[in-house]
Each structure stands twice: as C-alpha cells, then as structure tokens.
Amino acid sequence: MATHLITGAGSGIGAAVTRRLLERGDELWLLARDAGRAKELRQRFEGARTVVGDLGVPERLSWALGQQELPGELDSLQHIAGVVELGEVGELSARVWNQTLAANLVSPVELTRLLLPQLRLARGHVLFVNSGAGLRANPQWSAYAASKHGLKALADSLRAEESGNGVRVTSVYPGRTATPMQEKVHRQEGKEYDPGRWMPAEAVATTLLTALDMPRGAEVTDLTVKPGA
Image 1 (tube, rainbow, N blue to C red):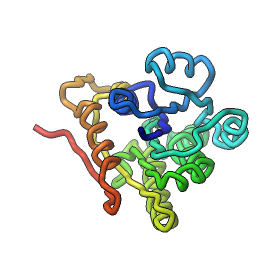
Image 2: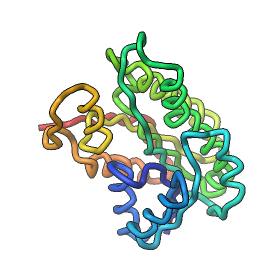
Image 3: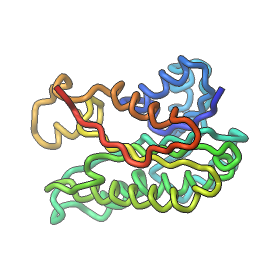
C-alpha cells in the first residue's frame, strides 16, 4: 500500500485521482485549506486523512504542518490545486499576481520543501499538474502562465537535485479539461461552457497514475495530454 499527499482533492482532476487511489487501497492524506473543508473531504472520501494548510498563505504552511500529524514516508506528493484569474497585463492588480503566484507556485515550492524528508525515505514521486499555459502564454493569461512556467522550472530543478535520492519528478501539462476551474475560465472569457467539448478529469487522472506507476528505473519527466476526437 502506497501513501500519497494530494492538494486539490475537492474537485476536478484532484477528486478523480483521489477516488482512483482510494479504490486500489492506498493511504491518502488530503490537504484542506481549513478545518471545515477538511471535514468535508473526510466525509466525501471515506478512509482518507486530512492535513490543514492554506495554499494562499505559503509562509504559514511550515507552522501549520508543524502542529499536525504527518505521514512518516510519502510515495507521492501530488500538486493538483490551482487558481486562475484572466486579464490583460495592463489591468491585473498586484494582489491578483501575488494570489496566483502564492497558490500556484510558492506553495508547491514550500510544501515540497517541507515534505522532502518523507519523500526521500520512500524514494517517492513528486507530480505537478501544470498546464498547457506552462509551455506557452496567450493573451489574458499572463499571471496564470507565469505561475505555471515557474512550476516547470521548479520541477526541472527539483528533478536534477533529487535524482540521487531516488525521488522522481513529473510535470503533466493538460489541455482544457472539464472541471469547475474550466467553467470559471469560460465565465471570465464570456463564453458558454460545454463540458462535452473538453477532456474529462478522469483522462488526466489516468495520465497521472500512468506516470506514478512506472517501474523503478524509469521516469516520466514531462507529459502533455490534450483533448482528442
């Protein structure tokens, strides 16, 4: 039985991965932003444990995790949570930039740093759900794309640093996926949302599990998955 800590388990890709891992009997620790959310996750995903920490305030994560029980070893740390706010560079405020970078980049950095001892013990795996925006930047997407470009840099550096410790690192770059975040993006774009046009979250979950389940001695470093016919 493997042990995983997952962010973003409450919806979309994170919820799909959580269900799949629970079904196969793995031990799950789910990060929740507050105690109320943690209770909701435990009720929804029976058998999962929770850790409370707000990704919007990365400088508080060290203190928050230090007050709670954590797994002794981690077979995977899965960064799936994220936020998005669209807007032109000329209109996005410093607050939006700071919130986006905190949740999408600085918190994954800090959470990885804090849990590296457990990952090293298990020779575990760090998985980053990045985005197509982590490989290119389109109009209106500057803050989100910058955070995801930074996440790619984090993953690449971490992989080089931790390979000697047996820690594997994978970045997955999904195209548009039928999730609540995608619905929000469509509202910001002023477009009608049709989930049938986009990849199901289960497809991205399968991609993550494929990378996770690679036999020792092989590593998927970067994987792009797009909506298909």
